[in-house]
Amino acid sequence: MRFEGKHNHTFRKFKSAMACTIAFVSAILVILPLGLVFFYLLINGIGSVNWDFFTKLPAPVGAVGGGMANAIVGTLILLAIAGVIGIPIGVLGGVYLAEYGSARINSMLRFLADVLNGVPSITWGVVVYGLIVLRFKSFSALAGGLALGLIMIPLILRTTEEVILLVPNGYREASLALGVSRWQTIVHIVMKTASKGIITGILLALARVGGETAPLLFTAFGNRFWNHSLTEPIAALPLQVFTYAISPYDDWHRQAWAGALVLVTGVFCVNVLVRILTRGRGASPV
Amino acid sequence: MENLLMPTSERIAEGGVEQLAEVPPNGGTAPASTFQVKNMSIWYGEKRAIQDVTMDIATNAVTAIIGPSGCGKSTFLRALNRMHELTPRTRMEGTVLLNGEDLYSSTVDPTVVRRRVGMVFQKSNPFPTMTIGENVVIGLRLNGVHDQKFLNERLEKSLRMAALWDEVKDDLNKPGTSLSGGQQQRLCIARTLAVEPDVVLMDEPCSALDPIATAKIEELISELKTKYTIVTVTHNMQQAGRISDFTAFFYLGRLVEFGVTTSIFTNPKERQTEDYITGRFG
Image (cartoon, rainbow over all chains, first blue to last red; front, side, top):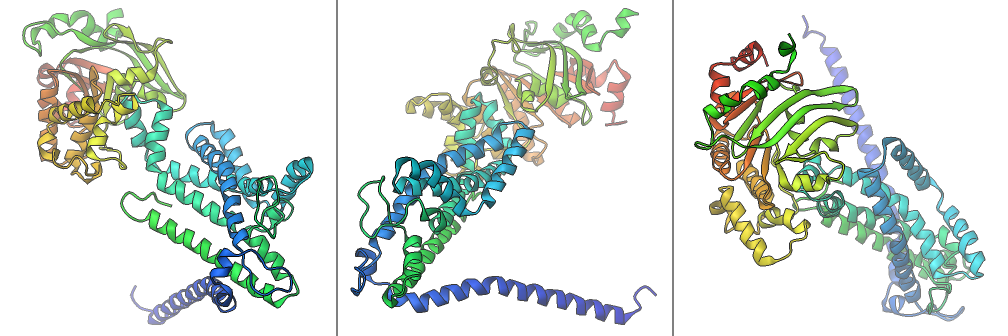
């Protein structure tokens, strides 16, 4: 009696197959843009990615050749400045949220960090423009790095907090029961156990701000030459790509494609690095 | 009338002195007490977990704490090295003296208390990022000991005391988590012994282990009591009978009965104790 109704069963099987198909198509649609972007960049950019691209300064308008060496180095310098600002504050803030603080203050801080994560990146550029650039009357590498660093803080803060909360309480208790102080326990036991996750969060934040253009427009500003001082404007890969892409010259367009390809490849490499780091024994779940 | 209202523990404290001396656990001399707990009450927020417990814990003996789940035995144990303070909103009344010193005096740093009163947990928890050797000496290292020769000596001594040395002496650089469950628990005991505490507290140290590993830990506990005062919480009545010199039965946050293990198990004075150890509830 209960097992009657074969039609019903067929219909259920049909529904299940439909749901599976829709999910599969959605998954493909998610991956498709990445594939397309990379494919398109490869076709258009690979021709201009050569030794000169990595070693030479941009050529003067009209001259053929040249590269983006200054922009590649500039991006690395900006990331270093951003890291110096964003990593300690983000990590320590995440430790505070996970280990200290009252539930009420923490939920407020968490909410604020999430709001900050949602702030359009150009806003950070404007803020730093008002705070630093106007005051010192100069675009500078420091201002650009600060803008990127400020974007990193809430990103690192939230990932650090999450991976620290994943460390089982038993390890904290074991350490405290040995007469180890709270702070030593946090640094040597908890953070060490969560280190892979924390490093992953830092790398992903660096990869994210490494591709930012908007916050650099009124801070780092860009530079067609080598930067000799952190208080001077500095080139950055995404800025250079932006400038070249909106220019009227075909040669610059090709270089913009190459710059975008290098940038995407860099971000891709960082993500692969993250995968390698989080694999293996004792990997922190991320 | 007044006497009947007194907690059992106080009656033991008053009238049970000869009884304790009757069967001294360490050969001849009357047992000195390591802990003197007086009128301890503990609250978690509004909930009172421990009610007015008074008991003395004998030196170089094993004291077992038994009772049904939620009776406060773990809370009591954790209050002996102030671990219960890690739970938010706890409040404690009464005094705990360790060799005559008040653990809860405002000048006492809980970190120092825990250095003298070590703890082994239910679930073995060797630090996953460290080798077997690093796990043992981490407590000393983080307390500022860096003399490698001293650390090596202490490493071997602690592992020998924990009856683990022969099994791991060639694998000291392997991760602590590569050991079996029973070995991990003995590693945790070695880690606790390495900081040379006066007391070792054990919170159901065998409840996650198989019978063979349990037997090894029990044997180890019996050996350790020559050097340390041991307080262990256990759900296993046979275990309490096998390893302990004194047994305390907790029920609903109160100390119902406390005395020499053999007399608790053969001749309990309280109805509740008898019901519990004969398996009528709990």
